[in-house]
Image (cartoon, rainbow, N blue to C red; front, side):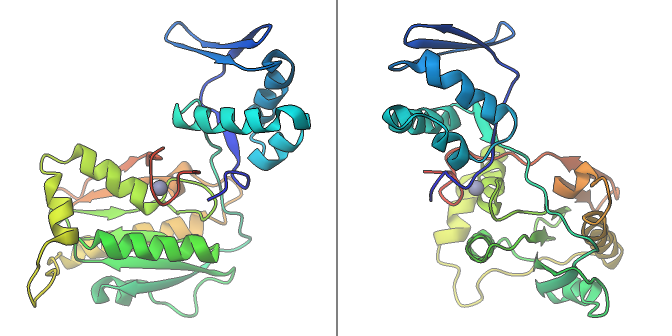
Length: 268
Ligand SMILES: [Zn+2]
């Protein structure tokens, strides 16, 4: 995957200190990076300035003098790897709420499928009631390939449901980033591999039951995200991962983390 189409920004407001062949990026006392390269003090600062403004990587690299462009590209990949550069927050601009195109688990599809609602394009919604992360990843890859934003919803965890962020095709995080984050937080990460690659027998993955009232709450969150896309000031929650706790009806919102080593959306 080429990095050129991504919009990047600096993760922190760095002060740039230059010396011949050296740039030092300093943010507070805890974050210091030393970058070296031939004449980097000449081409580096304007490259970093472009990212401060959320430039497309391809445009920022094109502005570097040709003799140093390869070095600049290598530097950009290093900075992505170190999380000094991150994807600029992508947003989806719509004039009116999109029509939901739900598929998957019937109980949620029934609640979301309103063909008359929504006018500005369609928003695919993958509704899952099994822990089929392989299917979610495949769905996400297909949406990225088609250039389509989408939503992921899962009631499979049983005690809680997830209502994913609006996932964008040209900016992270993606559904695989989210799964990898869950895996890192899990007390039993090996279960993710067992469910993906283990022998599940003829019955396969079993759907998880979920109470009707909690399904209604999950569906309301999905509808809110779709309608909030068309708000003049999109609420941050559109791009948050919501967790609905069945036992308490508590809803929490979390910023989904981009995984810089994600096999599906990392830029190398
Ligand atoms: Zn990813």
